[in-house]
Amino acid sequence: MKIKLITLFSLCLSFMAFAQETPIAFSLQEAIDFALEHNRAVKNAARDIEMAEKEKWEATATGLPQINAAVDYQNWLKQQVSLLPAEITGGTPGEFVPVEFSPKQNIGATATLSQLIFDGSYLVGLQASKVYLEISENAKIKTDLEVRKAVINAYGNVLLTEESLKILKSNRKILESNLHEIQKTFDNGLEEEESLEQIKISLSSLISDLNNVKRLNLLSYQMLNITLGIDLNTPTRLTDNLEMLSLQYTSLEALAADDSVENTIDYLIAENEVESKDLMVKLAMSQGMPTLSAFVNGGYSAFGEDFDFLKSDQKWYASSLFGVSLNIPIFSSLGRSAATQQARIDLEKANETLVDTEQQLKLQIATAKSEYQFAIEDYSNKKQNLDLAQRIERKNETKFFEGIASSFDLRQAQSQLYVAQQEYLQAMIDIINKKAELDAILNTQNY
Image (cartoon, rainbow, N blue to C red; front, side, top):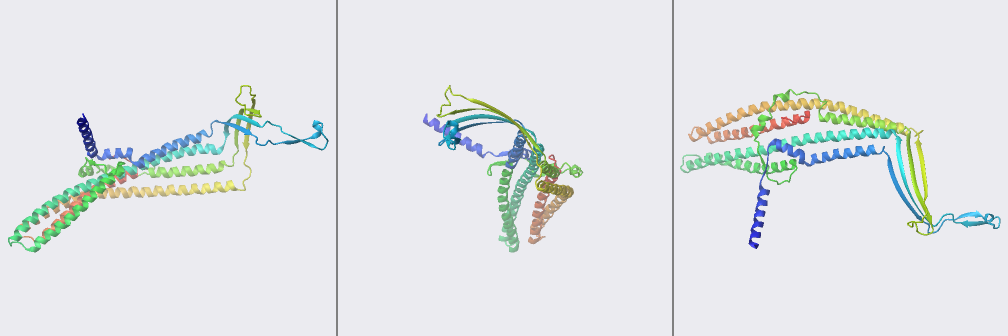
């Protein structure tokens, strides 16, 4: 029985280890959807909205009926006395008699219902809470757009390093094969030592690049995990490939998108700032308005020399009070006027910022479209250059082994091919990233 339990426990551990090592597979869209739910910045932005909703209710509740209760207990350690003329009790005129008017102990319980009837700052506060909620919602949209762009960039960087690894490994295999052939030719005395050295230089440089890309590949996965909102070292696997995504993100319709900035998130946030500053002006002005409130309370009190308040024969005395309070600001030595003027200056600054934001956004949209269009055109150019570089490299390799071309010509053709390969990969990444940048500015989330 003990052996069976140990075996079962071992199987469970093996299964858990296997489950932990199984990579999580993500397409790009799945990665975006996952990050928009689990990214830490997104979750905090959602919490900000929740806080704004609570603050909105808190502001509303201050104008609703308020009920408070209080219980007071007093025990005179040394009772206070009052002096009465002695003749009242038949004493000598001109003398005073100390008298204790109240029992040594007393207890009282009251409940008060208060209601704000009018307060200008309360009305402004209600409007401000709505604007604050809107600001939090727009901030959440802004965060979502930024996280979406960050996921696309991180996902693309992983694919870039993966493709670079494939190319570098393939190039290394070809160079090692070339080196082997040249080494045999050199050993037979049919090849110069310089040719062998040229290939070794190329191979050494390529191996260095390969090791660097391996490290970058690990870092790119970790960056993606952070952006997704999962543990740094969680195994992940990407199901999309770079070329497919570059084709999906190539859209001439995006270049014809509406250039109006009114629906962009940055413009909406700047509008929120203007609204909030306008409310601050109204709040400053409301400080000069009267406030009106009312209350009613009721309670019971009991008195005694000893603590007998819990006995059934204890006498309790009821009381009740109704009141209205009207507060009218009259003169503040121009303090309220100065506060209002400051708020108006802040409002003017916010309006200037809104205009500047509008102009900056128009420039950003035009720049993003231009860069995106260039990325599309550059991709086509780099693809053609890669085809040419591959043909040139193959021709020089053939010529070299036929003794027509020198080792320098072959190395130059190989270097040109390696540059063309990296430029082609970078061109695909640029299409994806520039499209993501344009989408983030225009507040669009589809590709």
